[in-house]
Length: 324
Image 1 (tube, rainbow, N blue to C red):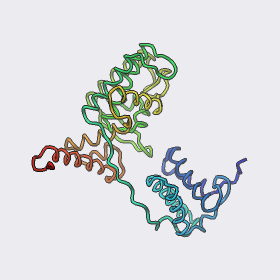
Image 2: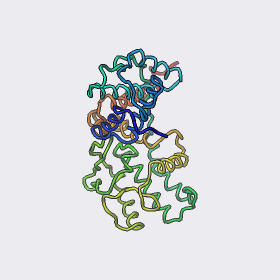
Image 3: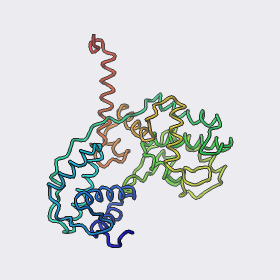
Image 4: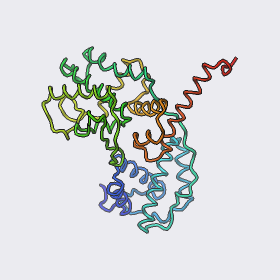
């Protein structure tokens, strides 16, 4: 049975994440898991059940924990996230004067693996946009029930609109599926997006996305009637919000229909947006704002993708660049 005496700083930190940082429950859960893992390692205690002597931790304890994670062959990305969580936790406790130092601040970290983001070519985007029509024309099986023609047509229009909106605006899948019709300006060619940390930004809507959205909204009203403009834009067959998990399942099927790599995800449409924008000459700051990145360095990874593409094109085409 769980004790009713959780560590007060652990509880306060989670309240701080929710209240001051506007962190999602997913983020709060991640931080909590990382901190609990360290508490179990250092004290054999669970901070959700008992108070912990956080001020007794020194740099050596932090190093031993880092070594433990590396010995378990945990990915570098996960290791960096866990140490980052603990650094943030100790910064919070220093602010609260609960500890005298941050033992994780001076910890030498393994270099993060640099992976160039994968993206779809323009031809692949076209193939993907055409895939829902092929899939639903075949009387696709959605879940456990065969869908009738009416819903198949609705799902086709909906999923094309989602793909076009994500790619057109560089949206994350959660951002797209949390949209309401009130956030669309189909005349001004923009959409108001609520991103990470509940920060709002303006994203663009191209001609193809606007056309797809108009068709989908008309069909949605025909099927479900007029609804509150603040209700979910993208809905399932019951008229309730479509979940990211459901769309990801359809997305996998569309990849197969379009003959595209199975490891592609809806997030790769966001990568594609950034890469294609920079390829076409957009400036880095504008792409940063459109993506909603807090730091320019996060956006700069796409310049490496564009540069690498140009280098490959040069090596393949220039007669003096090809290996003999």
